[in-house]
Amino acid sequence: MSRDGAPPPPDVPDDDDRTLWQPPPHRPNDGLLQPDPDATMEMPALEALEDASASYDPADEAVEPPAMVPKAAKSSGAASMLVAAGILLSRIAGLVRARVFAQYFGTSLYADVFAAGLRMPNLLQNLLGEGTLSASFIPVYSELLHQGREKEAGRVAGAIFSLLLAAAAALSLVGVFFAPFLVTIFFPGLEGERQELTVTVTRIIFPMAGILVLSAWSLGILNSHRSFFLPYFAPVLWNAAMIGTLLIFGSGMALDKLVIALAWGALAGGVLQFLVQLPKVLRLNRELRVTWAPKLEGVREAVRNAGPAVMGRGVVQISGYLDYFLASLLAVGALATLQYAQLLYILPVSLFGMAVAAAELPELARQRAEGAEVLRKRASGALERIAFYIVPSFVAMTVLGDVVVATLFQSGGFRRADTIVVWLTLVGFSIGLLATTASRLLSSTFFALRDTKTPARYAIVRVVLSVVLSVALMLQFEAVNFEKLGFQIPGGMWSDVTIGGKPLGTVGLALGGGIAAWVEWWLLKRSLRGTIGPVGAGTGPLLRMFIAAGAGAGAAYGLRFVVPPDALPPIFRGAIILGGFGVVYFGVAAALGLEQSTAIFRRIKGMLGRR
Image (cartoon, rainbow, N blue to C red; front, side, top):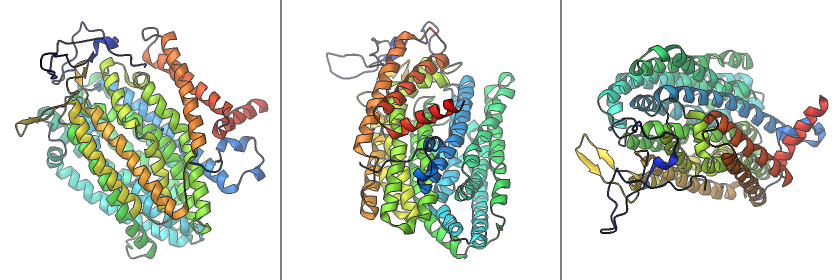
């Protein structure tokens, strides 16, 4: 797709990668890179991430006698499994929603509109939502429950709800009334129809963010009561509402009207996500009373802890908005490309990093008084569980990312060139995948220690570094146009490289964030070492994980030739290739003695034996 949104010429085969890669032309006379849309050449072959005690895996429960598994580890492993199950279902629903969305919108200007409109209300949701509550409210509430002070816990929860409701309502109204101003500030590159539609979509979606903040409050209550599945399953309803909207109205509605209908579907889904959790919240704590009591001691402590957490989340949001701010200045489709890549990148972060961190936080908070060694072992075991799944995710996204993207999105308006650009952007994000997921667990450990300032301080460092690197690297891949101001910042050494006419500015944006993630991880790990001792997954286990992932990638690479692109539709071809990768990874991991994999096979064997 060209900068003005026009589709590629009809005589270009969409599935031939050689026609998509457009490197800079060679100019032997002056040695400079000059734009030359007629120059093409054959595309290079696209085919061509610290020691601790053994961690517990939930699969062990199927084969080990209860006395052999520590109770705390059992509860943590089972909780992680429930969180992962809920997140898995919600993420599957999210991928289905994204696939249906791609079918109708591809990387068109309407896809950009929805990406921008959905992004802005996320500021409210992320500032006051799960991350802030995990740092401030859950540790206080969990400790009150652990001490048997349920009535006081109910009062604290009700007062926090009142504060969140007031803040969410006020900020939602600001978003609705000042949407035109917000769109102009945050997305200055949007003009004409893109700008007008984004304002409309933003006004509809902004109240949804306030409702999802209340949903995050429900999640905090349920997690503290060790009810993990429902709050992470609830987003399935949010995705289902949008999927239903597209399927019902998609075939008979123009795209400009459909994107507005989709915004209303997102709002309805947010209401459903909150309401489905509320009955269980009220059952688990019958002492809960919604009152205005900001001076209550537990509330005051949560608010004190929330300040640094909000600051940390705020600077992260600034970084995220800068990505979208800059993407709005790039070619049509850049905003949508960024959103597709982030959706895939966030999948393992939430499914594995968030699942383990969320399950560990209440337990770490309860055991804070038991000493540094207990916390160190729990954190190290959790990091190893995270790494077991994140290492193959990283390898799959970098080596087989085009297969992943094509399997999920390539159909209808989403073409082969879109697949390659999204994959390369995904590689940039994935550079920091292992660091990002580990940092979630390290931050949760600080939260359990009642320290929200240290993670916030390092989040600021990460964001500042990410901004600097993202801007510098993006400009190497694509020029930035400030059309409203009448000037352009020229691109750097790779700015003439395109894929099917699509420039690669989003790749530079993603690379900057991926590199900065490792700096945050190192700072958190160093600081935590001074508090509770060295924490890590262990060099030996990590090496074996990478060996197993490499074997899986090799097998999957071979399957790419056995099942060529024209043999099957992308979704079926991808299932075969990625399925082969997974089977070989788990098999080799078990052969190398990785406990997580052997526990899974023992559980499967136990299930088959019972039959």
